[in-house]
Image (tube, rainbow, N blue to C red; front, side, top):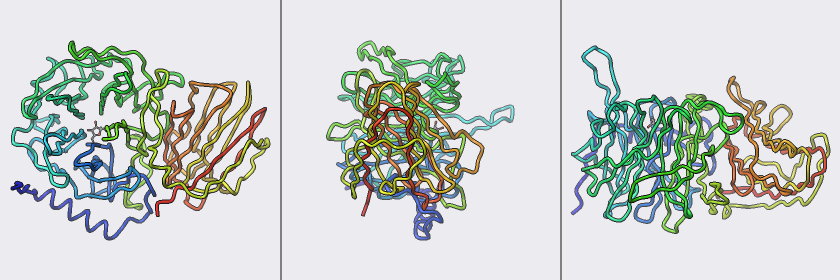
Length: 495
Ligand code: FRU
């Protein structure tokens, strides 16, 4: 007989609060087809995994408030990565070792159970009166609804990290199964003040062995490395990390919290990872802490937090703050990690509009047949040498978000300065595109408050929030120079 999982009063309280809040609804409408926090605050995706044939997404969750607070794990399920079903809160910070928060982590299916690995944060008062937050890795096991923290927790503490490295920046376990072994990568801060990724293994979830330092930042890419993920894809080994305190490097990396992928090769027997290529994963304004899962049909799918730590675009007046990117299928093409929206999105396409090989003028022209805020635009630019293309989205008389492409400079710019934002933060990002062939392809996926831009079959991406009034739905274009534009537009309709 299944053992009854004991629900702590803290978890019960969060579940009840969420239920009541959901009945009331939020003041602002949420995204249409992106995973969105039910109420309160959401950050990183956690435990993105398949269990019992269903796809689960957990997330960093503070239901009581639209600001970050004591971290719970919220929970939702999906069959197609487009519809999201809310589930009862999965974890609350209800133990001594995680009383300050159940921080990010991953999940696997193991021996018929759904296993969550997370970071327990315990705030301890030291002898000198100072408070320190110890970070430790913990396990909870469940059935897809209720999860029990195992009695051996915390299973990895500061005594299993290399001598002198930080027990206070030691977080975000991602786990996977390889034969009989369960592996874990965890972010950590080393003696040099910058990040490193530690690799552990176990046969039983309880006894974990330190394997190696998989990779080190050596102060090259930011400082602390958060939310690691490590997987093999089409013959390459890929490490994804979210570095804090990045320095901008021309247009290759932007300043602040970033996300990078390190394409390399991993010799399992020697446990040695060799870096080959390092690139930004998404150059948009709102993309952080991505996590991947492997579906039973063999696809590696990535989802990320559609926000950045430096600015929130929602608050108490909206009743929620937090959403995820559209899940993206990952592939390797010519040594580039490509990301494209899950193919399931296309089953929700409606009202196709196609404009073939036209030349927009040098002043802005409105294309009424392309209007919309919840839609997919596939744009093909066909032109040689030098031209400029500019599209305005979510436009009305005063608002717009612009995407500009300068062929000669190979420069793609996203600019939401006029999108209705009311805060002085970064609103413009540019990147140099990797393949500047005669045909340049832009795919734009819009939901009510987001624009996700994929370039040339997903070789590069830019993801950002817009807070433009929903009724501003115009699309305008202009070009300079010799270029033909083709556009295919589909509305995305969930009902
Ligand atoms: C990343 C992060 C993680 C941490 C979590 C806390 O966004 O800082 O490192 O586990 O958020 O909510």
